[in-house]
Image (cartoon, rainbow, N blue to C red; front, side, top):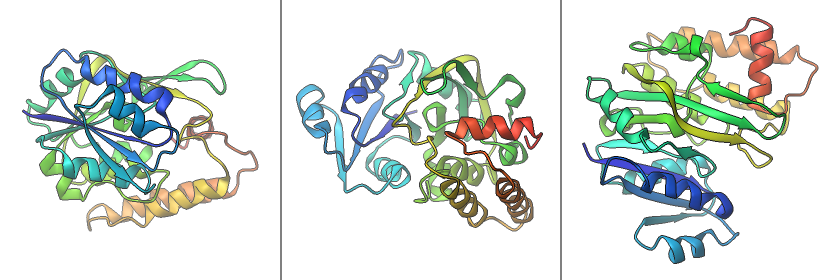
Length: 267
């Protein structure tokens, strides 16, 4: 297996070097790293040239995380694709553990991510222990997206079959996982975490408004679903939209929204 890791980034020069270092420190050799600078104006390009001249770099004009990941995959050479957001980290055994799962015949492998919540305090795991799924995970993923791109590996064939990530912004990772789950089985690289992330003021999963969340759910509902999965997908996202319309509280992050959904037994 030839492994490629794609890191999309925008204006995170202070975090990017640490993310890159975690990929370079893998206990398997030969991980190709492609960094996609999606319109940074904070010195990211200069950082990459100065400290990591050996890495493959792409420059985009600010298209968003989905298109940035897709461009990175198109430039990469690996037949196994992994991702790392520029404010996240891999553990040193990350790539090796995901590849061991793929060798069992799965098209998609994922693991556990530990998140430090710098907005509200505390830590949490994605997935939580009761959400772990293997095999056909479409129904489970429709309930909630229990994985993050930074803890995911997918065969290039599976990636290309679903057309990569959408350009919708918030929720593009959930849509990608569901599109994969329509036709591919998932394997879990547990126990133990393989990635670490932080919820901070600049996180993409920090919610600016309920309208942003509503728009994301509408975009997910209207994705191209195959005939077998379309009714369930549209019904689920309509259910979430109806629930959201009844809420008076404002959710500061995806995690706060998730906690409210669990409270109301929507997950």
